[in-house]
Image 1 (tube, rainbow, N blue to C red):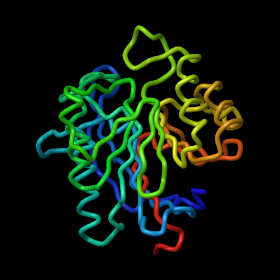
Image 2 (image 1 turned 120 degrees about the horizontal axis):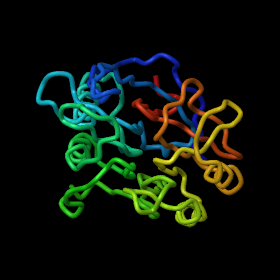
Image 3 (image 1 turned 90 degrees about the horizontal axis):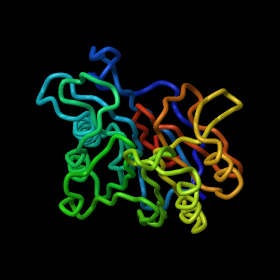
Image 4 (image 1 turned 135 degrees about the vertical axis):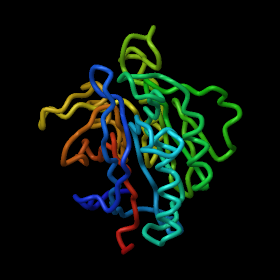
Length: 262
């Protein structure tokens, strides 16, 4: 069974970027990269990469979406032997921001982010957030899989995923809680090793917002690792969830390696 054993509290790398701020004013921030360690990874698998809520544009350069810059940075880190070559990149949604970062909550196409990650990893698996669109899903590279109620195998790990969030069904990438839980529980009933969500569970013990129905379902019906975004949590951002674990990767990049890796 896949279990995260520890996470370095300090990032080993970061990228400067711009993101939409309040009142139409862009903010300058840094995106942190963290190392985490796990048992239960298949023997041939050296690393997985998780990320979510990469809402921003690179600092300088070609004004690419932040996810494109992250993919390039990961490739450089692999080439420099700073991290192992990941078996897959796993994305939990909200990968878009306006070119001029003029307004929070912009919705737009993220095809190029998936394409960029597909160039540096053999598999890219993701779910869409409530601010993501795909211009032409059929034209994505063959090593990209966007999940919504389905599963995909990475090595010997089974990865399930549900796109969107709980909300008003008439709005983009939203479902009623009943509909969302029906789709999620159809996935978790198959006992995948990993579950990718954009919607976060709540964490009342630490007064962190999220959906209580999702939390209850995970705590009582799923023993694997749930990875999600949508709202930013401070430390600790790995918590127990029933017999499983829940990892918040909102606004961060996490490289998950074997416990015996340096």
